[in-house]
Length: 486
Image (cartoon, rainbow, N blue to C red; front, side, top):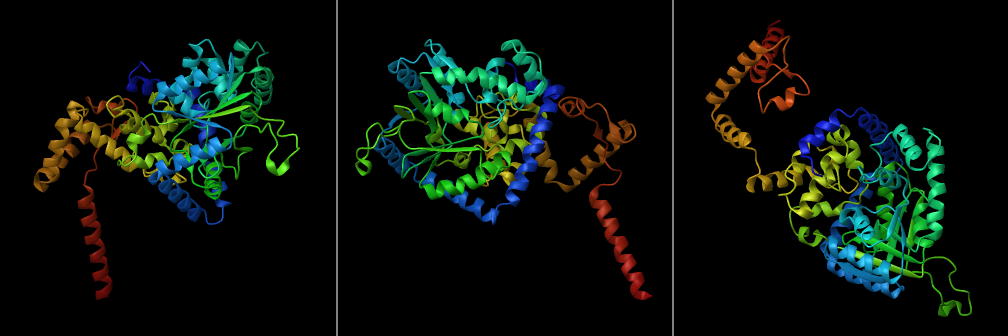
């Protein structure tokens, strides 16, 4: 995005429609998640196991990647290795050209958003149509996703109704059922005529070469089974060793994402359709449904550089979006203000981890460090720790603002000198109380104006906490002595 981070934030804070949309969805997802986890026996143990699976897999990622690639090809699929975004887009474009594909239908895929696949294919003269309802909405609007699992979470039903009226020519309506039916009617023809389907991958199973795709819409299965060629784009970290491990991950994924015990469509795909009968069923008709070709594009794009570093834990992420729904910052500014493909707490770590902290100095700062993201994460990723790591890296790279560079050494000096600290606190009490109105300051000079631009600042208490505590302790002691003497 071209506008500065703080400009995007300022715009988001005054966007009433954005706040209406965010409140409707994030609060609902958060409540549903709590109820769903309550229905899972030994939920904490399952989360611990899920975390252990992710840690184990990444510690032996090279082995499991090789096993997965062999298993995919043994099942009749083809594996392509993409070192970066450019390579991934080139590979997909070459597959499309070889298949003489003019129209591509796409299921939801954050990796394809990460590589900016759609513009790359369109530059080759290939028409791309998003089939996930949320992705279809933002494609019509010319926007990017604002949430990992709910791409159009920033739009109200009224805005979607107006968009469909303008772009699809349907009568203006705000009824979600009617809007969904209109999108379904438009997309049905695309499914039937598309030459190639592209999907994401939630998990790949190393032992079988199976790819697991989790959706709540039938578009996922239509995208992967109706066109004659299926291309699955997958980050190299999205592996589990066995189907049993996949079962554990699925127990926490849907519950954390949408509050469901299991998503409506959980598809397991192993290879393309078998044209010839197997030895066990010799003489049978083979498989009538499914693509003729399955291509799995394994995308690195910086992930291998993150392995083995203090930020490697972010690769445990299973893209449930729970950290976005609970984050007080995301709830106020939405996803687009972050400016990156991956918004919210996970994006504040993952984006600078993959691309370097230099282009993204603001993202690690866009957090209160309250720890709610760590608490709700199904695999217990310690996002606050990594945000601090990135803040330190930004400071070492010289990205700390000049005023903060001046302030921190002064604070360090005062904090290590009790007399100086007490003097400064007394001065702050006197100044803030003298300038306040009814105990509140409505304006502070820069950079503190960043606070009072949006809310009032409380004047310091007449007595510091230490003095209040001493007086309370002294009063309690006196009361005890009086009781004892009586």
